[in-house]
Length: 230
Image (cartoon, rainbow, N blue to C red; front, side):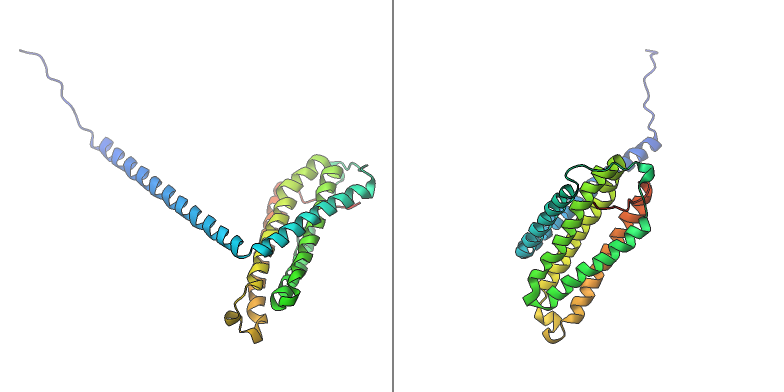
């Protein structure tokens, strides 16, 4: 009849792109499913860890909370609620100094965790570093916000708060592992060596975390404030 019939031209490149897109979608679904499985495994392991070390976790959290409350109260009482305002330009900063001081302080905290792990009768000593950590954190938090205002709040949120919280968690891990160390693993008569190695490893991780917050993130924030208590 003279009318032209439409022709369909297949583009092979378009087919290849569609196939590649399907593969990417499938890979994304597999990755999301694996991430979900990993998250469930981590949460399950965390729940099992907390359940197994419930007493240690409770004692540590209570001591840490009491230390924070006590530190904040002491900071407020020292000046009767009248805080001196320090402009950002006058705030003394020193990331490396704060890093070294915090690292030395952590050594003292982990030494207590080591003693508590070796001497089971001294297990209650784990409350001491948590009270000290909470006390210093509470006083620093009040001082940073009250004396240094915006710059202090920036330091508190991105440097000091993450550092203290991560240190508390890692110290809790060290205390729990040391207190629950198996006699067969430690050898009872020579329990100091494996406990010392375990404690030093976690201390190393904590110092590395301190480096990240004090040096790297502190540098991005314009420096870490050397907090002057009241």
